[in-house]
Length: 313
Image 1: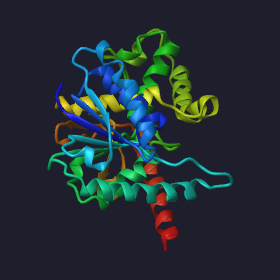
Image 2: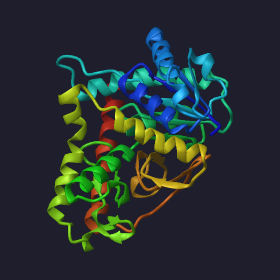
Image 3: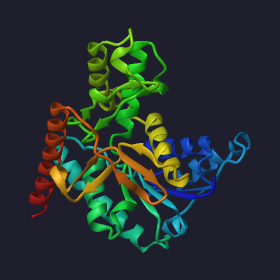
């Protein structure tokens, strides 16, 4: 498949696993790795290149600076900072936002096509997607956050495991914030097109347990091995494939909403994704409780944005 993808922050766990997932999926023709740790990025490119012979039609993989991302169809940002000793969550968000703004300035100066798409992966992904959408100067449809694509993958996988069914055939969505206020859409769950509650294996208890495990999954990966990586890479590949293949697949990516109950926040709603980036944001039929959950998610994000703005003052 043709298409150039650049990953900023590629020497970290998330950036490198995303590159590997893209390579294995052969879903682009060229991958460029960029990181402040330039030698580490070159090492990742070298390591991945050594496996090219195992992947017919796989992409070329190189490393470089911002000049190397010229001509990219998709720019992925995975670069981020870790929380320091005695540092609050809001302080970390503030530091990551400043780093992110510098990256946006460099991206803005790169020679990119007028239809290039930005995919934000760095956390807090909804906050940084908002920053990119409001400060980069691109059309809103070209700025996408990974949002709850990862949470949805986790939920489907964990639910399939608990019910003893194929996770790939589980249909379900997590919407809202990629964080504690995420919302499971139990009312729309299905298995291979059949409403999930009609299966003999199904129980609401199992579904609730799968969601609880989903919400704590990131913290559990952090506790056990220092952070998530492989599933994030696969989530990134889903979005990249939808863009480059112009599939129109509906994914719960994070985008900035300008009107309605979720105005002026970036969060995940069912979104049709294609070569333009956002093709259409869909309005799902939700239960009253689920819709209230999304309204709460929006308020949580507005509160974080307000706190950041207050801190900046």
